Amino acid sequence: MSSERSASVFELRPCQRCMVRHSGVCGHLSDSELAELNRIAHIREFSAGEEILSQGEPTQFFGTVQEGIIKLCALESDGAKHILGLLFPSDFVGRIYNRESPFSAEAATDLKLCTFSHDAFERLVREIPALGHALLEKTLNELDACHDWRVLLNRKNAKQRVASFLMMLARRSELMHCPRNAPLESPHFEVPLSRADIADFLGLTVETVSRQFTRLKVDGVIDVMNARQFRVLDPQTLEDLTGRHFGDDES
Amino acid sequence: MSSERSASVFELRPCQRCMVRHSGVCGHLSDSELAELNRIAHIREFSAGEEILSQGEPTQFFGTVQEGIIKLCALESDGAKHILGLLFPSDFVGRIYNRESPFSAEAATDLKLCTFSHDAFERLVREIPALGHALLEKTLNELDACHDWRVLLNRKNAKQRVASFLMMLARRSELMHCPRNAPLESPHFEVPLSRADIADFLGLTVETVSRQFTRLKVDGVIDVMNARQFRVLDPQTLEDLTGRHFGDDES
DNA sequence: CGCGGGATTGAGCCGAATCAATGCAGGTGG
DNA sequence: CCACCTGCATTGATTCGGCTCAATCCCGCG
Image (cartoon, rainbow over all chains, first blue to last red; front, side, top):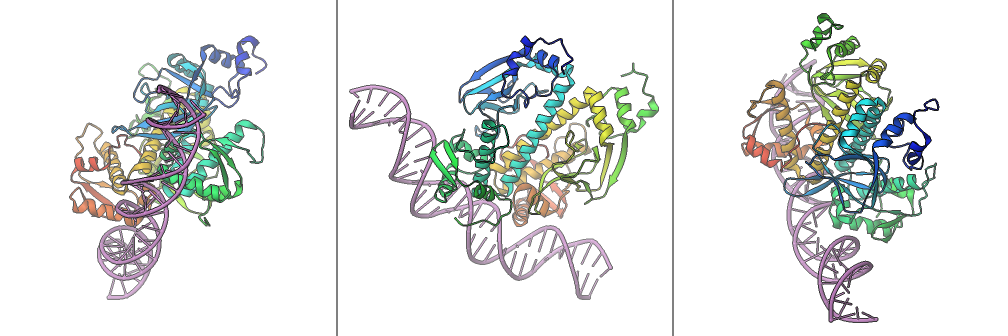
């Protein structure tokens, strides 16, 4: 990669400061390829609640999440909204090869997105094989994650679902704050969804989610500082509660 | 396609007789590309119950399903097995870019697979961009299907789940037998899974699945000829019972 | 013909949904 | 500063769908 000189240092400067430089779809591009991608890149910010993609509408742009969290939602014909998944920093948003997005995307928190216009990006995908491969890998990872949630929804009870969800958030938050090999000792993390959204995501009701939170709290597993700020006090117990083996439990 | 002469008619003959010629990952290749892929292709047959990929083990080969149905399974650490999805003719099996398969695959019925050895196929993916794009599209479709099942598991009750499952099978079976635009009047179709597998797939128990089948039967919606042969008597009612679940498809 | 595994049916129970209050914080206007 | 409102979260009481446990049926097969 040091042999390519067609990309000036100047052109790459924005990427060098990017937090997700090596984990996004841009992760494995050569300097010249990265410069080409960077030429069509355009940072956009969204505030919590804003819609980024609308289900059924043509996709205007793709993007890599730099900061914040995105909710992917499916809108039922009866108006109900279901959360299909969450996107975290370094994840890719937008459905390639499909003018109509099969889901909508909404900023769960304030958001910083590195966007690419639809046409320019699809052209680059055709021109840069590595970009196509990166997209394939991202998609495969998303599929794996979806499979995991499928198992969770299939066979786990309310407590296990909530524990799994918190574990996921704690891990994610950890990864972001200490990119190294931290020993799972996160002080606190933010839950980027309302209780209603959590319930929807986990296939439960608000009431059940709330009850599970308080049970975890009185058991001393977590600390709920306010509705959106949590602290994991007993990571091991939480991990066990996610249900690797259903030899739970006390109460 | 008539302009390329590097691929002899002889080389392409096996593909010309292939039922899934235009819907597999090979679907949009040029004649010469197809010939190259064909050179590493090797038809393999499996009988029902045989394992095709083992979770956690290196992938030996990839393949396109020609006939039969594959179960994708996740093996939990406690030994439990969960069905993640089903693969139908024209679907692609095998996890590229990941030596260890994150799931196992098992023949649900007798199976005919057009296989490609791991290394040769990954080389071709690098050489033939269209192949990478086809894989990406397949994966995106699988992801969409997974999203659909996720919604189903989230918010649908037993009857809706069973109805959705039968609807999916009826549609699939229809597509295979009459590739044209049949008006959803399939005489009968086979359920390629045992009750236990269906229950697992739908996040229910065998008993519940069985009860729903009999209720649909006494209501005159379906006819259960034997444990695996079904007939849809009232497609409209069945459709309604699915609870507005528009995306059909598997996995 | 009897055996065995999958499928069906039945009775009772339990966990999560539902229905219904209450609590709590942030914002707004008097 | 307080009273009030509004939206979200928590807590409690009750109901109900699907699970569990257990018996029986069905059908292929030696």
